[in-house]
Length: 246
Ligand code: ADP
Ligand code: MG
Image (cartoon, rainbow, N blue to C red; front, side):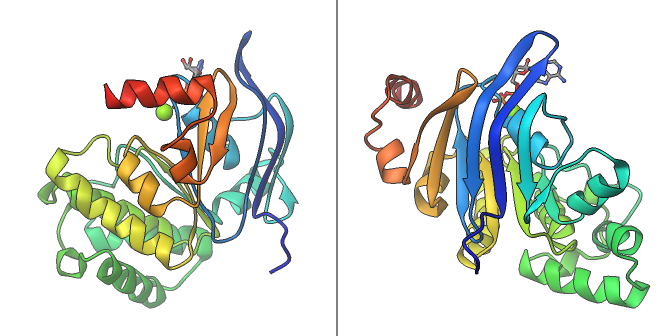
């Protein structure tokens, strides 16, 4: 390892029209690190994640992923995105494809893998998220938690260098949250680099190497979970935590 961060963000400003949503963010993510992004609704958490893989274009500043500066030409964006996995609140599986096909399609289109190769890799990953027995099922016949686990397998099938999660459990019934967090914890334990936007503070406490509190367009506070969630030093941190425990 070189010590070079896998994701390096410098002085990121993101505006929508005249509204400044991110106002000079510096954030590095080291290889193998699990960073949980927390903060009030509207703080810019989703926007920050979307900037990392170029789904949103930054207004100024710079982003490097794997030592390569993010540019906005299509070829480069496709290349960057093929190395960044993203999991959203909504699972967005293709309803007309089986679970196995869902995990295969981008492998074939983006990585040019053969059908056999893609199926073999999909099989391994479905095993890993505990859904090998659902390979031939259609998404409609799965629970939300199962669908989200398929979405995670689909993202992993690209062999990403980093995984971005945007509130992956917020659309789930409470009893289904645990199975998704369990898969994410295992990934974290195996050394996957992850940036996770979440309201699941228990997950943040257990899995995060670092918690970053985003508020008012900036990083209000960051550090080990026990500090940021246990004993915040900023006024913003104290207020956010107080709201959570109300
Ligand atoms: P969070 O994920 O922390 O709830 P978001 O990143 O979704 O926050 O949004 C941050 C702010 O940016 C909000 O005020 C939101 O209304 C605004 N915003 C997000 N996306 C857009 C967009 N495409 N156009 C205009 N404003 C946006
Ligand atoms: Mg959001």
